[in-house]
Length: 171
Image (cartoon, rainbow, N blue to C red):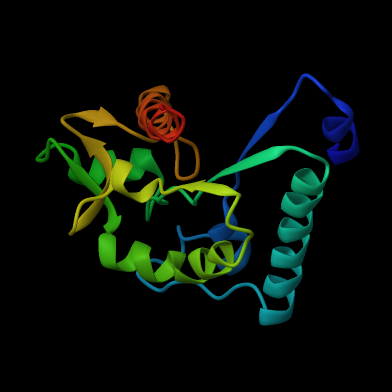
């Protein structure tokens, strides 16, 4: 719990990763290429308020909070994508970058209003270029299913995050 974390003197930094978009809009699997709208605006605002309160409670408890912004979501289950497109392609698009940017817009707007001392890592460039967010690249799957990174995807994200975080704290 947050109160337990805040009492731990040996924990200085808390890394927060959360699938904001699926809670704000609903699952992308059955709605792509629509952005999804399974969640009412009232519920969306309440979900944001809860998330916001958690982040502020950690910060106000003396923790350094670092957020990994939403990770791109594949449009289908990874097995379905590989089955339908993997035979011909070394790389498989999870979504178009434009779709991801639109789906992520609300989350990024809300996150940008957090206090500036809460650092945020943009995960999108790890998986996306200007045209596509990838589920598979060079025959390597970044996802285990439609909402969990594979060990390869998690390793890629971790390496990029460590590089980014280290560059912020190098004199």
